[in-house]
Length: 466
Image 1: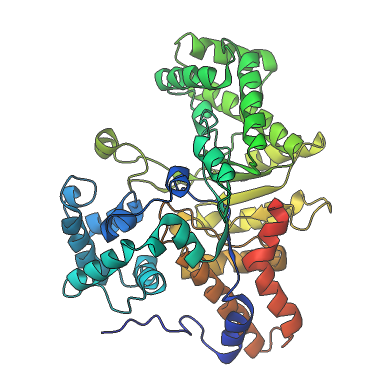
Image 2: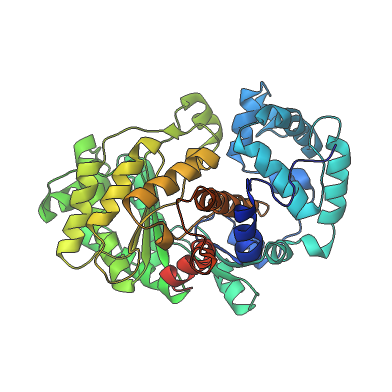
């Protein structure tokens, strides 16, 4: 049985079809936030089979499989790849109305030309057909990027990373722009003192700076920040639980760091003060370089202690948090703005209840220097679905300027996930197409056609200066 992924999938009227097919279908992709391994790009990796490229590290799929009653060994265990794939095929029919159902069949069709529904009956045939193609040179990582018309990819990298694979990518002049992204989350994790000190030791080695006090920490981070900049980094990314409304002095932060560095535990209040003080320093560095800074906030991570101890982080046991954020976020950005140190900023909220908070917050700190300097990030994680994308764009339309939106990203570890850009573009065109046909917007294809092109590609290109 053929799938439902036809040329007008998600396009509900002729106007939506026109916007999609004539304006954005063939646009290049800029993916400014991914978790793709730069090593696999630098070495032009060839994958062994469909399970390896599709299931490895994909906690979205693992989460669905567990919910479907699939034992853990088929998600993260050591069973054979084909056995894992069969369990995923068994799960797929039960993902109807979850975006995984759409993504799965879009990826099969758009990556491999496989136009069949995945289920236990078709699994072996699909697996073997995809595997035959994965053996071909046309399916290496670089060729997959080319197949998807990917122009630019940003990876996610720790400040202590030597970025050797980014150097390889640069030196080999590969035909895709690949940039590192500065992600200093570990240096904020002072509440776990033992792990924190292990990380600071690693940062010492990477920077060549002895880190015995807070001032030396800032020196080491600045040195690494400069190094990232030298390899083309254009943005930072910060995964934080929330913003905290903390009063502190420089002397107090130095004492908190000194105590932690000597192995003494810090209180929750002290950890929050340190995190906000350091986040402020990092934001100043970002402004000095002219980088874009991204804040992913609100995730409640590693909820299942037993599975965290067994598998570690990023394995599918995170959920939406609901901590208050508005006052602390406002004061954080205001403190930077008052000093003239607020750089271009994208805010991603995982809790959809915060949509209006963010939609209104970004308007407080637009300064006329760049279109859309403060951005409401695309629908993220649990919101990365039709309803979530539409709600995010409706809020941005109502409270800001949708036309200045920097568009979609994959936030993925898979080289097959670029169909999410096509998914987003179809949803965007359908939303505007419906408004035009209802008479809510003019039938002005010159402007609205360019608008969807800008949101899909040009806004991000200009905003990040790719």
